Amino acid sequence: MELTNKNETGKLMDKFELIWIKTPKFTGEQMRTIVATANDMLKKRMKPYPDFSNYVIALMAFSESGRNLDMFLNWHNSLDKVISGSTKRYSNYIEDVAGLFASNTLYESSSTKWVASTGDFIFEFDTVPRIKFPKMDLTCYAKDDSSVITGVSGYYYPLSKSFIGKGGKLTWTRAGLNPATTYADILSVTVDLTSTEWGTDSAVFYNKQYFKDPLKGKIVDKILANVAPEKATYPRFYSYDLKLGIKEIVKDADYVGGFSQQGSKMIGSGTKEQKATLTFKRNNKLF
Image 1 (tube, rainbow, N blue to C red):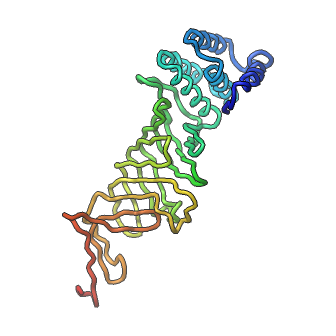
Image 2 (cartoon, rainbow, N blue to C red):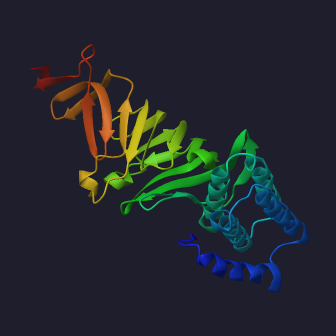
């Protein structure tokens, strides 16, 4: 929920009155915490719009999400620490948390949206607020397409709009490839949530059609608009090993060199020092 102008603040307060007075959704302990937080905001001379409006939106989203008391208290403990900083950061933090409570959204702009598959998260504070996800699927939606990291765990940092995680898997289904035979295990990853592009230099790639053993390398994924699977150039994997051997990469030809998977296409690569080679044969003899 996002307010588009100050006049909507009054309508918002009418809705909040329903869950505060007429049909209370908060316990006595929660109410006392809310009042204390509001008083702290007044001491910082925060404004009805957008500061208090964002807080009320977050409270309403919390009440509708069915979260427990521990999460409420941990969230407000982090608010107590963040309020010592700038008013803008505090208000933005509250707005981001409202998105989490309402729809598991980590970040949303007019063009990009990052969403967790679960509401199972824990508020923590380690010099800055962070939100721990024990395990989730992290999805970026943009340009009528999506990129998904499945089974990743890690920390969401609202103030820097970033996620730092480990584990997880990326498949090439967007490029029309079988996820059982072409995929990458992610060892660690840092994601800028304001972007539709992400990557990691710590991945293990599997293409079981061509390689018996997994390959170490880096991944880059980027969402592009209106790309058919057969024309997809993402996700991309680049091997660190530049001496990979693929026998019969095409009939009567063996390949030695680096390897990249760019969407649906396999691409060979090399350097000036380590060039890629193709060796051709005729009747099983070098040609």
